[in-house]
Image (cartoon, rainbow, N blue to C red):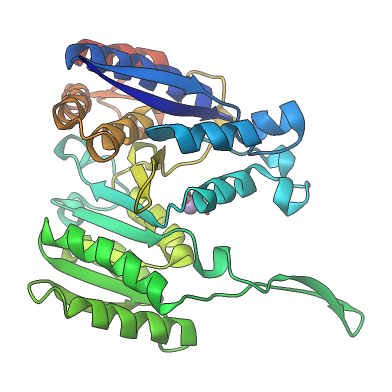
Length: 358
Ligand code: IPM
Ligand code: MN
């Protein structure tokens, strides 16, 4: 009998529905070719869920995600919700989903495709051969630390958050990073701010401790400011970067731009058991929503990470990636990547090219 997987599909806001449509078509074609079946369960999440019932993560959506084999998300958010109380904003739904599914490990690969080497804002000789992974802790750190809040002190309003990690949290994310490094070039760079922050001192000690189980992996440490600089100075020095929630958020956007467009980068968020969440690193780009201009590739590559890491359908994942390489290799680009010699495509036209390549 053919395998059957349930996918919780969250099209989200902005360009989300457009890139979702492309990705869904490709996934259907791929599953047919490789003899498995994908059951898509399309759910409200983010701004569209707020419109429906006032909450970014409705209970039914959360329950359906928990029961699925994998969750595939496009993007959420819109400036029009900026004035809502923080817990009612689309972003809070995403944080709650990550937390409730215990998705503590966020994997963000950054690989330069030879065909895109000229699209980066950095010189080709700097980015040539870059192949790194940011492993970002996703359910702790300053994003979730308590206490937090706003209060009045001496007639002046103040606000604060807490950056906190337990040894266990650092140990768990370190294990993921070291295991990944073992399958790659066996190099880890841990990023912190241990020259200033207690939380980073503990982080550094615990990563050192974890490294004792991996004598073949070369470990070094960078302060986050230096890491930000090294990423644009000499990105080839990195293999696996492991870091906390906030530093990982910032560095992964920076690393994404090495590839020329944040519209290219996929990510996987994993727990120790239970479904993973697969989503592009980019946001919902409300400025170009509905214009059939968005680059669907980050979501397509997120879907391929889902096939590989979430469902174990390696062949299908490879096919999907090959299709992306092939179409980009032929010079086709969406607007975010365009340079003079390129053949410019809309979102749907890019989808058609990819479909033909499958
Ligand atoms: C990301 C995003 C989110 C984050 C936002 C939308 C909450 O920037 O996935 O990197 O900060 O984690
Ligand atoms: Mn981010």
